[in-house]
Image 1 (cartoon, rainbow, N blue to C red):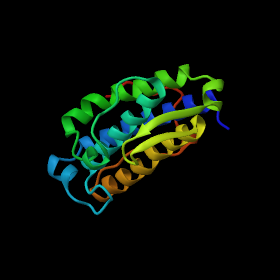
Image 2 (cartoon, rainbow, N blue to C red):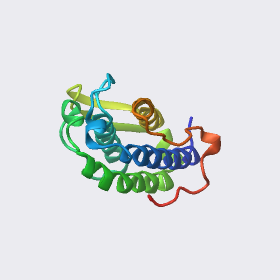
Image 3 (spheres, helix red, strand yellow):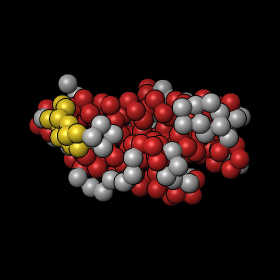
Length: 171
């Protein structure tokens, strides 16, 4: 279904796009980042907070590391701008490290976890969960991209073919 190379490419894309989104968001003041813009989670910051929470939840299932705690209902309020700015590069590095360690056998296996949202144990194809993980990121970054451009900020291009071979350190 998918390969470790797919995971590595998408982890690089994730880091590249997060850097672009965060740099664009940093050009706005706090009021602009907190303004309710009609998106599902309301504001730029709240959407980024939910995305951080979701990424931490999924990567903890993949790598066995620490998760975010709390639930979906708390996810939009969990992280303020300072925490997002400080923690996002670390989380992207964690995602990249996992992508370079995941094996074809793992991707072909089943992932088991307890869903607190559904209140039950889950078992799904690991590859399907990985595809959801990267798709979820793209979905919410698209919302943030639209909110940023509406606010006058200018994130970089989002097209995969234009992704750099190496994502530079955050500026």
